[in-house]
Image (tube, rainbow, N blue to C red):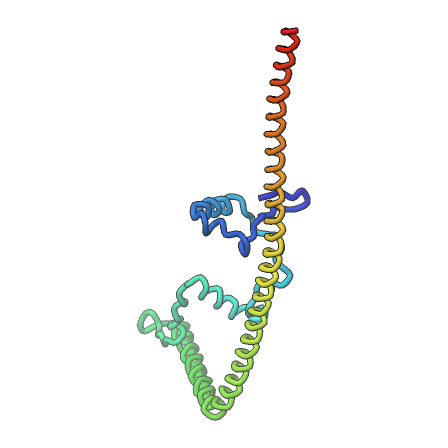
Length: 215
């Protein structure tokens, strides 16, 4: 994990190239713990990733119903009170109570008449209306399938691009790591040679001192 002064933290990982997690399973658990602790979602998504689809933007009722289904809330119970014909709460009842009950009965009768009219219209024109509706639904399904196929193609293209770039960067990292290892080995060899030379110089100094003392 590296920190960029001009932006958020950048995760140095090449999942299409690295296989350390497969070679060392214990690393996977450590990586997951580290990601859960430090990784933050990016502020922007990849340009090829489509924005989330917002359904029923122009239909609040359907949007609310979709939200209810997603949250697994039960359907509200049907209001059966308006379909009843209650009489006055007390007998014989006042004139006001009977007038209210009569208005409710007229409203229920009108409702039933409208239902009968709608059923007659449905019987006459419903079949063709459903055919047209089904045709539109089929077109909608085809459009959704085409959009899904385009999304899959873009996803495949994005993954291919990531794999190619990571493979390229991985090869560069491997070459740099090999070069670093070679340079480090050369440095160690030079240091060992320096140590050997120091020992030899000290030995020669000792020999020189012995010769000087013997003369």
